[in-house]
Image (cartoon, rainbow, N blue to C red; front, side, top):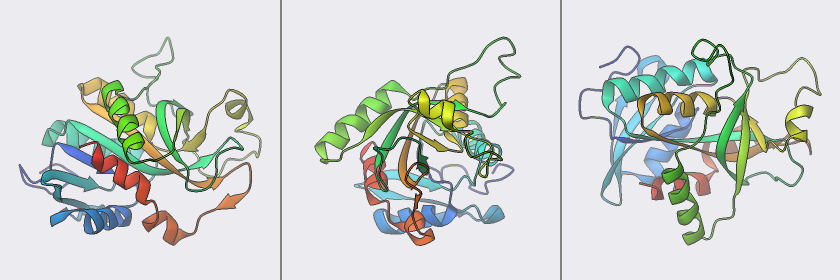
Length: 232
């Protein structure tokens, strides 16, 4: 048992899918897994373990933003021995060719957060995906006939920026989309030597002004969840 997760030893798989929304975690567990048990309800941040094609898998909500997510990433790795984490999240498109429900694999994560400045006071650390896990996801996407984009994404600290053009430099440098957790995941995974990948579904377009409904955000991103589970 850790400070924020009430699971007992052995109740969490070494392979964990992590949406931000705990209700999406519940939906993934109930939709795709067999023999599901709920191991965590602390602070409403639901966590579940079950089996996918006979293999043990856990799904854990992380909350919104780097500070919340970093707590759960760290405790899962340090206290429960998790070896692989795949973020299954939503993102806002920064490029005009990306449409709602498009799938993005984050090769790397730029960020507006200052989480790495304490460890790297004289430079900028570049958080990246685990290559072996990324390669597996690409292979599985091809096998499942799923189209995807892969590239640099932005992990932002602020959901409602004060300026409408704050994303312009990121767009001009080819950053695909913006979300709020991946840079922390890739950083902590590198620190502890575990595998991490962020799979994102475009839920909004900051170029087209399009938005998904709350129900879609919770339940309608089947390709992302299916692909993540096939990376087991």
